[in-house]
Length: 262
Ligand SMILES: C=C(O[C@@H]1C=C(C(=O)O)C=C[C@H]1O)C(=O)O
Image 1 (cartoon, rainbow, N blue to C red):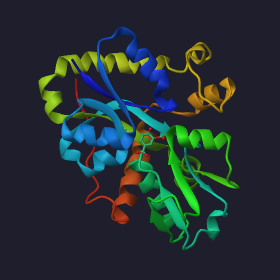
Image 2: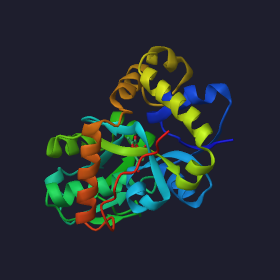
Image 3: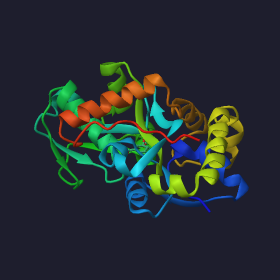
């Protein structure tokens, strides 16, 4: 049986609600940083993982075509929350969530390369001036913020580069790709079908979902914001992200993108 990593955020609920209907697969549910490690260590076969995870260990993985978690412009659930305007963050302490891989690197690129601001990063929330959250913690605060400013990282990336931003890729362990090709092919076809139809019945899907602090309208609007495609323009955005990640020393080299062929 295929063991699949499931990101426990609202962003992929429309996909996993459908995938779980038929009882064919086993799911391990967690944050992206935990799933990245589980896929690396062989605890799961396939997962939607941080896009930076592929760039750090490209020899371990193959990418599934046409699938991602991306934003075209704004994302709403990857944000920097701050009481300071962004230009006044120089030398301030910024909290980094431990749930992320990609968004931490995205924030570093935005501040260093595009905004030319030097800050200190911390994993200790106390004593920080601004806070990076992703997923549901970010989405809740996006609509219920106690902060003066909310900087949407997807929107900032789009304003600077004109590209979509790819937070997560569907990655399969290369060994699994060899051993379980037929099961993977069926799973992939199912996943692409689900993606294709994922935005069609959101007003029905909301009957099965509750997110404390958000209205149904806000959730549906969020699901419409999140994008699951991996087009040429997404791939150009991804390559640009990897080039900047390399420039700031977050990855050892810009990886070649290798996809699984069925
Ligand atoms: C769009 C999002 O992207 C997430 C961000 C990730 C990361 O920073 O590594 C990984 C997976 C995505 O679920 C989100 O958090 O809502």
